[in-house]
Amino acid sequence: MKLLAVVKNPVSIARYLAAAGELTDVPSRAPGRGPPYWKSQVLRRQALGDDSPGGDHGKGDEAA
Image 1 (cartoon, rainbow, N blue to C red):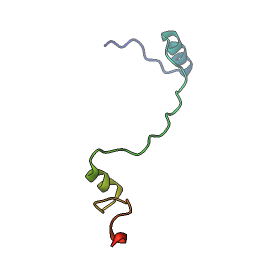
Image 2 (image 1 turned 90 degrees about the horizontal axis):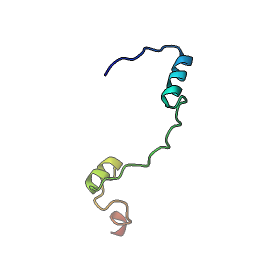
Image 3 (image 1 turned 180 degrees about the vertical axis):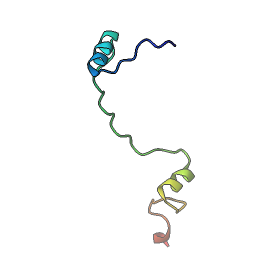
């Protein structure tokens, strides 16, 4: 790699980027992601704080 230029002036930076075919404006933010998914039910239970082995499917202490 070779240093071509040091540009400090914002107007010069925009002009250089436009000449190089690059975007001169800041891109918008991407939307937020959903919660992670783990194939392992053990890791999922640990991360979500669900200590019951069957999860929250209506089984457990209420059925007794």
